[in-house]
Length: 525
Picture 1: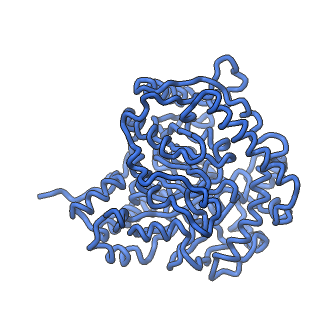
Picture 2: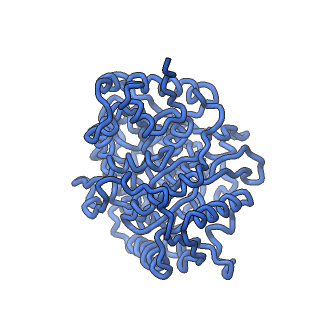
């Protein structure tokens, strides 16, 4: 008798094949994931990664039971979670984790959701996240929101005496990543402005693609900053990420930057286990300039060991490693790009000290969020950022555990991006991160990609709008002077705009050579 199909560590490609072979169907898959959500997310360790289950998930799955994955419907019957800042025009809410938006629904599907549904996917539910993608309060813990509570890391779910994770789940796409790592869905969609895909991917031992801004439509996603926002996949394998990119990467009249989109016909066609041969990969760590060892100098010994092993694996599989610092790295987040915000977080050790925030984020979020609330949100009286602030003030005991200082700073701007300080900050970001940063660095050394540990290179790529692909690389331990269980560390390959095919090829070859991913213990079938 054939054993039942196990979903606990099944890749998206495994699920596709099981459906194609008739070993399972969409209803059985959906029920299996819903059962796991009850067992591990609601009960057991209480991971709290799924903010809301789609009440129509099983009904929608039943409609796909007679359909097998195909070229036209590559995701037919496959349950996918989406982050709860991505609009769905169904009975689910779209809240960004905000108590102020608890009742909010969306007038129509975000473009990424429309594309998932058109490919046959079953939207399983909404994943928890750091509230407003971690741009409302200073020092808000990764994975916390006033509406959804605290997401836990499945590798190390323990909390400290303030109910904050000792090992963070990564943010802000915390729930999306935790759910994939713990086997609560086939794959998930998250978003990033600067590190919000790379951070939870490294913390949860996953693959992610932080795409070039403009590869995947942002229409219908609760924003931070249009110059850097993007959506992207969180998966167990590089092939799974490529499968999802095939579905999601498309032009959209609702998102003008997608007009410049460049992509191959099939991202899975670029995957090659010998893809590292002849590649030139930059390692931004020059022993002759220890004072500029920004990306590797602060890694703990275990993480340093993991990255040394990554380098040896790359070399052993034919890549050439070029050690050289990025000249403009000291400019990233430098003068004229950051502004002081008074820290009034009640739980912060530096309360009433100034904290520095990105000028681009502070200025863009007011205009962009007001536009989303006006054009996309329904069934809520909240129509502006000012409404969110007022609601939070009126419900401070529930809504403002960590304050809303970043929103207060943003609300003080004009909201039309006319201020010269905003235009200057954006220009400096592009010049330091792209023209004189990654572009100049990759030109000077003739590089195919740059290698970073986990999310350490997130800011330079995000400011430039450039892509990164992360793949599990090994395990580290210890944080802030505390002993911890082992938790994952990823290797991130970053490149120029539209270089996703190159990065996927390199990441796939490394993945096949290293086989570093191990699922968290204790979440089996």
